Amino acid sequence: MAGVSNATPAPLPSADRPEVAARLREALLAASFTADGLLELLGAPAYAALARSETVPALRATRGDTPLETLVRLFLLQQPVPHARVAEFLPVRACVESGWLAPAGVDEVAATVDVRPYGGPDGEDWFIVSDLGCAVGGAGGSASGGRQADAAVVLGVGGASTTLAGITVRKPVSAALDLGTGSGIQALHAAQHATRVTATDVNPRALHITALTLALSGAPAADLREGSLFEPLRDDETYDLIVSNPPFVISPGARLTYRDGGMGGDDLCRSVVQGAGERLNDGGFAQFLANWQHVEGEDWQDRIRSWVPRGCDAWIVQREVQDVTQYAELWLRDAGDHRGDPAEYRARYDAWLDEFEARKVKAVGFGWITLRRTKSAEPVITVEEWPHPVEQPLGDTVLAHFERLDHLRTHDDAALLAGRFRLAVEVVQEQVGLPGAEDPEHVVLRQNRGMRRATKVDTVGAGFAGVCDGSLSAGRILDAIAQLVGEDPVLLRDRTPAQIRLLVEQGFLEPAE
Image (cartoon, rainbow, N blue to C red; front, top):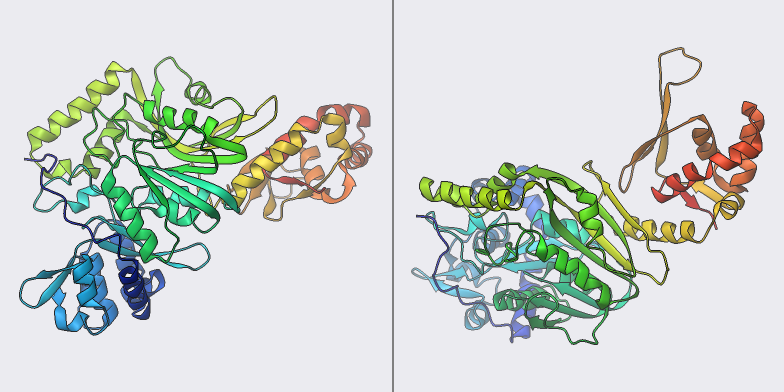
């Protein structure tokens, strides 16, 4: 019968032996146990299959005896390997003494944790440590013999982790905070551009694994604090960057620490967002992944707007919406419930639907929330739905969005027309119409980078954008267009600033100053 395992979690390697972690790191790199090395060894199909918790292709690709094949079987596929063989390229004795490896069978050793190579944004070779069976895929992949994963299991790298890392603004800061650090991937990224990194988690096992991830990746140690969300922080502590991939799943109860927040509905995500405002320094960013409820009779955008703390600009992007049945099935499968007792599965499914029915929830949204602390008397909150493909990393795109907001906020229409703009370099113009027609039916501006937006523009908007190269003011360009189309230039100046503002806000035009 499926259920949360009551087994004692496996012992973890010592976090107080940095010299062993350094020796192990050196050995792994020497054997090309890196993201690039794995891709070359396994090939793209087997490498992609690992992310789906499918290990058969990788097992087939590692039937040889090279150091890299042996390490993949040991640390990613949980296969015991001969002690004598692995001792040729790993400091086995030190790894056993410090708990990275354990004796297994006759003259064999096995890994006590998963170690997944992970490529940093600038080509760094990092390693993400997680519980056995959790280097790839969800917790359902960590169950053995149909048994549910332990409630306090610590997962490795997943799609949500890499999404948050990709959208995070990366600029030098004094202090960064990782709420709910898990395996430490966000803290690892932050350590590259923050003088001081604080990481919190309600699960002490996660804090231990974060320390291992940082040590094995050659990164500075973080200030690790046990507790829920902001609770471990002192009242006077503030940060320049706050990131969190919180346990955002809206579920009936808190079965799995890594994903279920334990608060009613989407209250945990709301608490994270609202609590970040007072913890941000001026100009600081807070960036989260979150789920939110779509409640009958309520505008979901109004719901999310109400979460934004005072004194903060916000950019909220809804990336996906699932009805309540899709949502329940997704997370039941994530936990491996579909592989257990059918009656137990139906009972859990019913509990999810009962919870949603009681709260009048018809769907659940997923997306990104970015806050920026501002001194402006009128913060700007942008809420939008954008389910289309984007190009990661988006950190620079996020930063540029808020910089453009500052420009628009400080320029009234007269100042806007006196300013100069450039068409963003990645923007192309598409014209749609019948072949041979004198004029297109409509013109579309499309971004080939970043958010990859597309927007329809009228003849004036297309002509204006096409001329913007930073040399002429917006007003002078409009006067020239008015002369070409035979329109009153005063009227054209009056009606065009709103369109210019939209093109600037969405990143099609950039201030040239």
